[in-house]
Length: 289
Image (cartoon, rainbow, N blue to C red; front, side, top):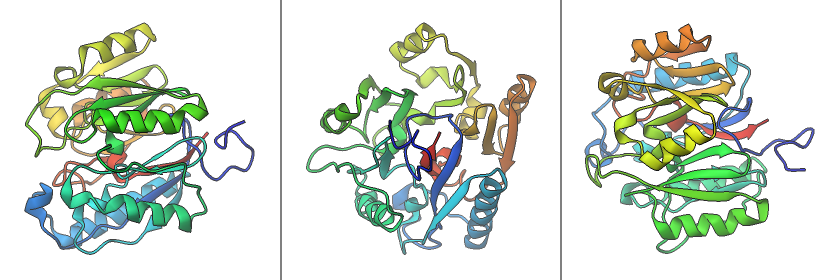
């Protein structure tokens, strides 16, 4: 029995859509090198207010929210999904290739310790990975995008850490898109809203990944370029059929609603759109079951 299925468990994740019980988010820094981080400079007051409203939305939806403090100067640190991966046994602080984010996994490890969550292992040396490049296809399979933020050595290191849990890491080559300075994670173009319904921006999705989804009987809503640019593919499932997204992609929201999905939106004009990080990026799920 894994931590995620143990009665009274406080941590454990092996799914993208199982009910989100506990989540870690980090308050935003209000100053730093926005240009180096790839942000459009936000309004600091709006940034804080939008983050508070986002946290309250999650709480209102029944999620236990664990709040980490901001880190001076590290503007990307608000995107808590990237510096760690949760498994059934605990957390894995990663090793981030983007220089300005290299210290974030250490801070993530400190949060895991504070919250009483064991560290399964870490990535070191030339093994790089970002949390945004992983996607649980099922309880025993992680899809991992190989690109400018996650490399083959990182995939091999993750596989070694996950093998004792019976988890297989299936890698997919990512497209060049806009180059190494631009944030393209696997989850940039792929989100799950139920076990068998995803939202996908097909032009960036690896062909083999789409073929694998079809073989699994998974369907998806294919979105247009404008919706993709508005974070329409960055959707957080709170539980199957109940999701959170930025209030900027009405066509995606309406299509989800037509399919019976309960959609909750938040104002992410500064918090998400100016830093290219939607609700999945803002959250590090600690317990899904």
